[in-house]
Length: 522
Image (cartoon, rainbow, N blue to C red; front, side):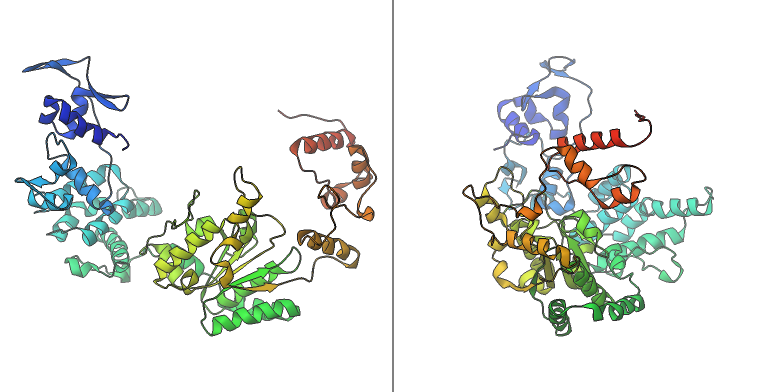
């Protein structure tokens, strides 16, 4: 078992009779934490009746524990009221009976019979938390704890819970003499009301005053939800009408199938296999706009930040779904059922997920389990229509120190979800002209392993694609024939190399070739 200050306090009480006379918070006055053990102090004032014990005037802070932590919170409460426990069972023992839980022990000891403890909790929060965090804590107390008089508790802390609204109006009006008043209390009550609604409760159930929203200038709402509803439906509709005629047959097939799923409210998993230049982003954005033109919510996510910027309202998948950075099988995303993100997801019509092949399969499975939990629907992704897209020929998941088998196992194609996807393909490259079409086809054939390898397992490039240069200077001469008035040339041409050292060499050569005197800035 991992040694902590608490577990070692209990062990100290077993072996040291003097520790049996102390509460946990008093231990640092007489003992020091050294090498993961409590040891008697060697400097300080001697304690009367205990000449071998030395006392120091120190401050020690017990770790804060959230009310949502359940029995852990009540155990923290008990260590402030039980001296020298020799076991966790002793903490739960009241009048010689070991009770089932720490909360039961708190109740039997009279620690929860009145609101004194909840008042102390809010008073402590006044010293350590911002007003919004205090309001969130107050909601947790109302929902999860047995407060006898919520009205009295509100009256004691309403000034502190409304302080941010008060300060905001002072700054807005440039009037620092403005006193806190009923409008600020009303704004705090509006916040509490909205939070309670997510738990299926309201202020009236706790005999607290209802907010008068008619005169409130600042009402807190689900900001994520509001952001996804900010789109102008008329503008979105015009965009759809303008762009739909440009769909080619392959794109139109995908687009029509997804629109049909939306019209019939069918939640499916769809994968669009789309190499670069085949119009994947165009189709994705058109689908997003189509859904938003009806006032519905469409979430656009990507596995990388660059790809997310190419989608209107795009965010990374880790940001949107709160995917853990270190993830394992059977993990869940950090989304509570009553959170703002959960409310947004329950109202989502479609999820567009770009660059999905570079995500580990565990991430997809975590999102799948989380959406099923949040939406209370056992269908894949909680029954939300989900469209994934990209090209497996490009970049697969990165596995630290992994071999080919590890990378393959981390791929979404190894997930239980993959067989549930309906697959579509986009093949026609819309970016290149006829002169470069052969190169585009070459890249696709290379990704699909259709090209012949040599004896070393390497793909031999066609001779018409290889320049007969052996020096980097020759490549620079070919790419940049002139360095005079060459702004347009440099904006269109570049030399790509795989390592930074080569980049530095090329930059150094090019800088020396530019006309004029070179000046170095430190």
